[in-house]
Length: 552
Image (cartoon, rainbow, N blue to C red; front, side, top):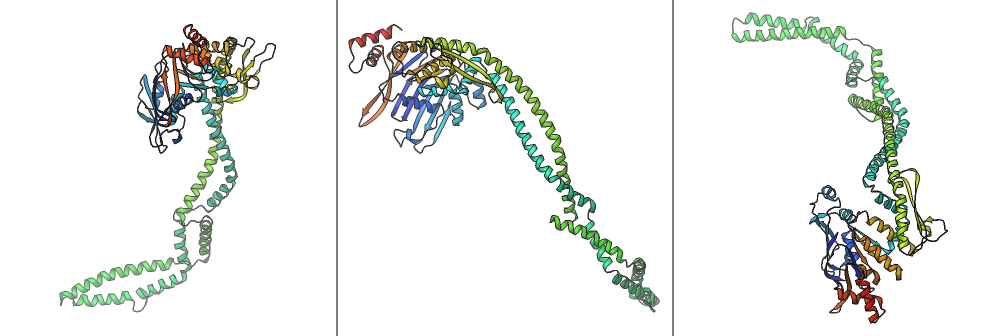
């Protein structure tokens, strides 16, 4: 529940602090006194966005701080999930700088506005006279039924399966689109792969073929060169080998005269051995050298196939071509594997849909189980609000397909007149009737202790006389299970409250500000009497005010 509110430099509020207690609190004041400003300050605490227009003094910071008692509302998981310190006495603070920068804090820890809004929605519900427009919305109606049925855990479980099912369906759509595109590319990839397979490349093959072709293209020149070399080395008269042999023999005969001649003889002998070996090697090459134009054509044709692949795919070298061949093969394998993945995802979709139907059926059954109870209680409350012939019912219709909230459409049916067939609430109810139905709905929800604090902003507009007293009685009953704060212009409702605050304006040094204070018992009598009178407070109004206050 809301225990304390502190506001500084917001709209017409310079500075104020209010303590709130349990039960029923009424807030009154003249039109334009600033009651709506208080709600605006609370709206900041609930996560509403703000700008510098909210600042009273444009060069000073705006601050709104609210304290809450939160035990018993299952909020520990929220604090753990958002890495916040849990305390049964929790403080939410909003600050707006003159430059328009907004900051939010929960127990002095900076948080995002979405976190503040999530917590605020679980602490306070502000109901204005304009909110009755949402009463005709089927989503709002569904939320009411689920609140009464206590379906939070069931809805969370259902939503988890729904989200999983939806994700799988999106995945399947992407896979099918990918498969469709891949099928169009499959023939092209297969044609490319076939070209590679026909060529049947080997690692390093291009480079080897180019070297072989170079030899084949110059075979005659190579053969002539080898033959001439063999002749010079060992076949001519005299040959190089014969001449060097003769020189070696000369120096061998001279080696006894001088040591240096002996060294020359040894060197010649070593070179002679190498030269004979070289001569034999060249001779063998010469014997095996063959001029084969057909083989040259064959190698050239093979190279042309490789060059064609290089030019077509704009790559160079055997390794690059082999890598490209592997990539094309992998793409074809991926296309083939898509079919298996599609089959697997389809099976998952069928499995999650079975789970979804089962959870959806549980939701439907839980909703249908409370429709009669809701209809009975709201109809009874409407009769208390001066609508003796009112009839309210809840219709649960199946949807054609599962939605994020289930497989049902909830419709509130209503008639205020005897003998008239109920119709959809949002289409046939007048503004005054919608206000009373909304009050009856809020009364129903309050009995479930789902929310710590409920604020009514002039929900009693258009209500007067005996009905006003009945509205007050319902509010008083609601305040037994939650903290209820009502901004009202009706003396009957103000008189039934446990606490009474007055909002008023003050003029100081040419500026107007809004303030609020709790009224004493005597001040309450006077304020209620003013509400009963037009201008002048009469003795009769004072007497009626006392009766309203002390008879409740």
